[in-house]
Length: 261
Image (cartoon, rainbow, N blue to C red; front, side, top):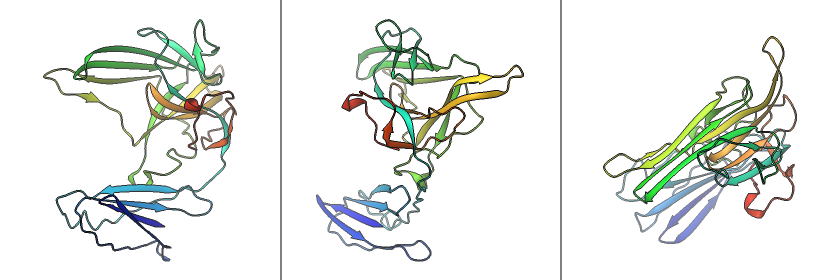
């Protein structure tokens, strides 16, 4: 366990080990009300976790005597996956265009994608930094495919593994709509959430009774259209714990690569 104190551009770190109850207590004095306290916990066989608290003025006893609960996620079965950082708009705005997760490219003329796993449609209007509107519609073309949200618990924020170890069986919806906008005299809209992870299912195959016999599961960190996706290549495996050393997408540029599990 490590507790870091940052005051007046000076950093101080205190390392230690939790007791049998999992508690670790540190007291630190500083000549400033502007301070950041950093909590980091590590253990062999578990994912590290790091959280910060800004203790900016005014002084508050409860805020300045924080009690943090950090939950370490166990390293399970990291697996090879198709993983890529996408930071681009669809080739044509206003039109639905598919994206092939196993190829890492769009499904349209001039691109290499073959199977439209996820379809993106984006509209963009920008007059100024205070007058703009961006909308993204995310859909899934195959019956049974879809997306759902996972909210990271406060005690797990900052974990190297942001997602659960496995994707759920149910709860997927075929459409998701996102909006960021600002117009003079109107409230700003922005539903981006750093505590949110998206979980998805694609390439679903059903039998004649509607039962799922095959599907691929994955996850998304970030939000549209700046996100990292991870897709398990094994049909019906819901394991979404990525091994960064086994990315199945080769030839990626440095700005397309992902390192988070």
